[in-house]
Amino acid sequence: MDDLRDKWLTAILDAGDEAALEDVRVAAVGKKGEVALKMRELGRMTPEERQQAGPRLNALKDEINAALSARKASLEDAALEARLADEWLDVTLPTRARHAGTIHPVSQVTEEVTAIFADMGFGVAEGPQIETDWYVFDALNIPGHHPARAEMDTFYMGRDAGADENGNPFVLRTHTSPVQIRSMEAQGAPLRVICPGRVYRADYDQTHTPMFHQVEGLALDRDITMANLKWCLEEFCRAFFEVESIDLRFRASHFPFTEPSAEVDIRCSWEGGTLKLGQGDDWLEILGSGMVHPKVLQAGGVDPDEWQGFAFGMGIDRIAMLKYGIPDLRAFFDADLRWLRHYGFSPLAAPTRHAG
Ligand code: DAH
Image 1: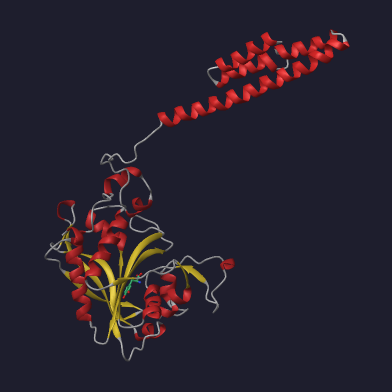
Image 2: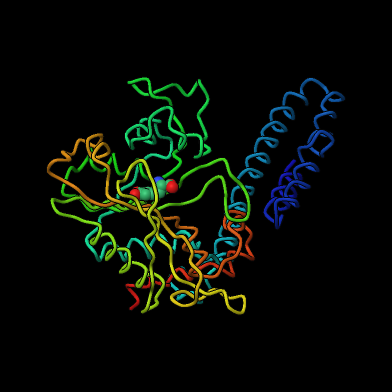
């Protein structure tokens, strides 16, 4: 019995890893292990012998099992220690300058636009992308029968999306103009905000995607005129496109939410297949604008007899394409890593204004 004990306790201590320990366990106290075989011999003993040997064998079995568990625990501890030592990493070491990701052109341009208008005293406002049709249309002087509702290719939410407390159904906003109303409601006049964000229309080709980005501008005060609008947009274009001599054309147009309304084109040339801004004989439309319609002021809770101002709406993706020479709008949203590496910006690149 003592030989057996010495033999197995030594084997347990000698087992160098968990696999070796398991072999020892099977050979010692497994079903066909040496201790089990000894147990079987009990049957051939006299009752007196059995009375002696039985308890001693059981005690030996318990002792071996305890030694196995203890060894197992110490092997596990040692394995963990080895792993910790092996996988140790000094997180305070300086990193290598390697940027895995890039800033998407839409994010970059949104930052640039925000920085330029911030310099002119505009704050930033945001509104919900799932909006009631009252904010998207009615409040902007687009009543139910107005053709603009159909022209906008609106995505309507399913009936089970319900309606707001006044029974207005939800749509995906087709433009950022509803944020004009929300800003007036929240801040009143005087007011100077831009509202960048996602908008949605059921449209898809080289220059249209079902989701795209706009930035809305709104400036209200007692004596704001079209002249202020013109200066503001010219100043913006000069800064944004980084061209000293920018030429803008204000073309009379119609929007239900402005009176008068103007679309703004920028002078450009396509000579040699590359787009150059500020020269040539071509014009590219970049935004819609005008003097805010009195009904729109009223809808926002602003008294049109006291306040007036201008508004504009511009496609962020479109001015990004123009500034950075990106040909296809659809590629903006394909999440193609090669495209992102090519057109993306370094995380450390500051918006134009800040860099200058
Ligand atoms: N909301 C218009 C659109 O999506 C753009 C626009 C035009 C916004 C004129 C304005 C504006 O604020 O005054 O086409």
